[in-house]
Each structure stands twice: as structure tokens, then as C-alpha cells.
Image (cartoon, rainbow, N blue to C red; front, side, top):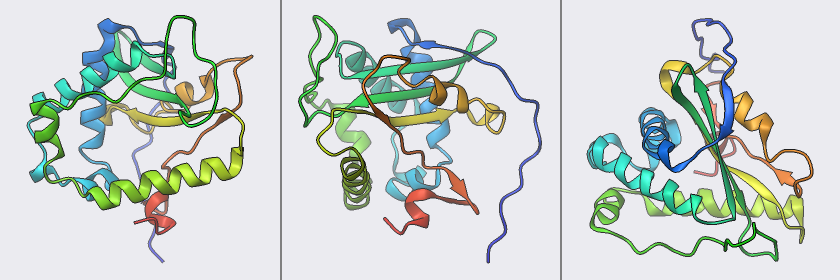
Amino acid sequence: MPSSPTHEKKPRLQPLISRISVEDVEAAATVQVNAMGSHTVQLRIQPLNKRPSVATQVKIKAQAFRDMLSAGNNRIIKAVVGQQVVGIATWNLVSNKKAVVEDGKTPLPPRKRTKEDEEALEGVDVEIRRKIGMTSAGLRNETMGDSKYWYLGLMVVDPAYQYQGIGQAPFAMGLGPGSCRVVGRVSGIKRGRPTVVRKKWI
């Protein structure tokens, strides 16, 4: 049986938690790109040597965050230490069920792919990514039934700030009191293996 990975104990931090603004998208995208650079599952989906430059990845993800901010079917939460964004969590509203979004906003439509998007997709194992997405959606829908609900779509922490409790804060914030039902699934590590690997989704 493989042993659990050991990590240097670090002091617990108390980040400031709030929803991001347009001014935060570059920093949020940088955190996501840095975190995904060593993520076990993401490396299976797209190895580092098949990814575009870091600058291109940040540009694409920053635009995705801008698009999300203009829609009402998501919440993007940031964790800040000092004046630095060190963690990001996105909560998404299921798009295939009747649900109410914020006044003046509509669910996010598919974005037209750019040249950078096409470059970023090169080297992606589409089958693995599709299988993870379909399996995750199936488990969520099995749990929630026909109810409208929000789910945790992404939660990442800058590698330099991991194992200090940063991720717990934006996860715990969720959507706040009075929100419709929430279900979250975290690709947590157990015995060194992410959930999607441990459950043999890939």
C-alpha cells in the first residue's frame, strides 16, 4: 500500500475572502495556471510539454474569468494574503435545469474560440477530460435530482501557499446564507491520489 505523501508543516493562514472583480482576473488566472502546472489530473489531461506558453495560458484563463463575471450563473471567490491573490474557487449554477440568475444577467453562452484557445487545446486528451466531466456531472445530478443547485467547479491555491488552510476558506464561504442548495466535489488527495484517479474515472 502506498504511503501518504508528507508535507512540511506550515503555519495556518487567515486569508481575506471575497468575490473577485475585473481587476483581479489576471492575478486569478496566474494562480490557476501555477496550480495546474503540478496537478496530477491536469498533467494527465495535458502534459506540460504540450501546453502553450504560461503567458498564453494566463491570457486565456483571464478572459474566461471576465466572461464568467458578465454572467449570472457563477460566483468566483478569491483568497487574499497580504495584497496577493493566492486562491480561487468558482461556484457554478447547473445550466440544464430551470434556475434564477441575478437581475440583468443570463447564463453564460458558449464563447467563440480564438487562436489562443485552439493552441491551448493542442495536446489535450479530450477523452479523459470528457470522461471526468461526464462522471462528475452524473454524480452531482444523482445526488441533487431535479433541484437547481450550485457546485464547486474549481478550487486552486498557489503552490507557495498550499497546505496552510487556504482552500478551506473559499470552500466554506460557498454562496452564503439564503442561497439555493449547494453540492461540492473536491479532487482531494488521499494516499497521494486525486479523487478521479482513486475512483478509476481515468
